[in-house]
Image (cartoon, rainbow, N blue to C red; front, side, top):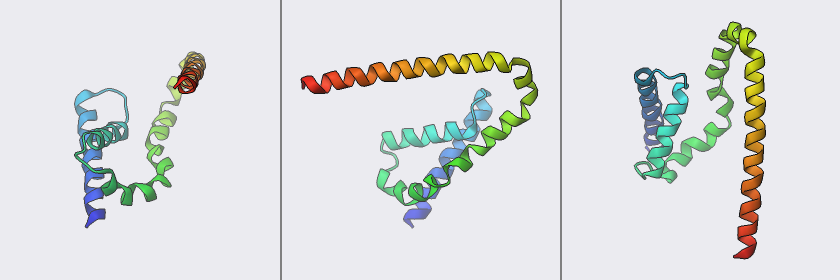
Length: 117
């Protein structure tokens, strides 16, 4: 019964994510909305972590399958990539380096803070 309850929470959150996607009409995949809702349910303790473990542990191995719809959408938008591919590549490189700088500064800050405590 615990597995059924966990799958029910998972499917309800993904279904709600699909509904939100239709209402918001912003180009974010349904799964992202659904997983965000599931995360919020877990943070607000509507769903207990222990209840979801029996389903989440086996599904983690299948996580790449959740990314397939987003990848297919990118392949279907190949014309857009041909037109603005260079701009997209530049934006991705800038965001990558900004992320690397932010992560390194955060790690340095946390290391200094831990050493002083």
